[in-house]
Image (tube, rainbow, N blue to C red):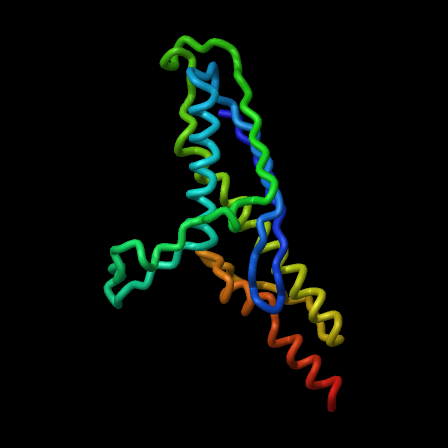
Length: 174
């Protein structure tokens, strides 16, 4: 199965907000039974994955059980959190006799493509940390950090190094 995906994000160092600027997906559906349905499945699955990797927090108890089971605390992607530019191209490969009517699944695999948004966010955080360290003349060689799932605004804000900015400003004022 051929799938390619590229994600471009931008993070706000002061708030931790991650803006999903662009996502490009190329997906091989075999011989699509219905390109409109496949396109909807690809886009919907990707957005569901984006929610999983970036937005959906679940409070758990000490046993690991989810505390909320309703929709009041469920943060799904909305029109302002989906990629600003969302490009999906469907490839139709040749006939294959071992697939149902030569078609391939288009629902679940694109969900995992949203990991590219998480990886792009991690790269942006890493660059922000390097830049902030260079401003304060500190050695930025150890930029190891863990960006968990979901990579929510508070997590991105903390890992981006806002405390470094605050230390730098304090140092400048002293």
